[in-house]
Image 1: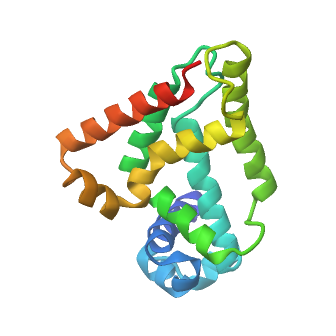
Image 2: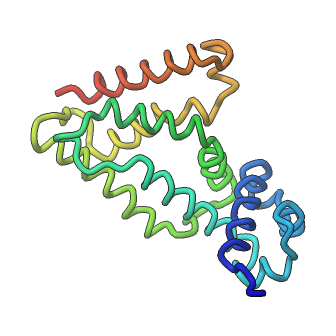
Length: 194
């Protein structure tokens, strides 16, 4: 019987996402990922290298997922408020990405894994804002790179600090999530209005 290499890698990555999101790269062990995935440690090392390499791979994969799930080309033709709402939805449904990014910020002092590649990823998003500014659909009063960071923060901070959101706006009910999403959409539109 042939070994399902891709299936094995998926199991490892799924377990690694959960472990790294919960404990960070320094608090997670390959042994714990092996146990959670049902795959032996040696195979994890063979496929992904050390723990830092595996963390970088996990984050790369999670960022690719959000880029595919919430694409953007140009805010000259796309509604920036609806984009922000979709980003809010994504983070609500998959809070692991926000946790992974927070852990990365805590653990890495200087350049992070794949930083150059990720700069390109974010540059594409910033270009969508610039295009909107060039075509008059987005204000030029805030630089495009700052605007993109503000939009992502506006949409993602709810899942980054859920305890603060709960203390300020109440428990996480469907009605409250609908209210939060509506606020994100409205705020993004007002912030970017020319």
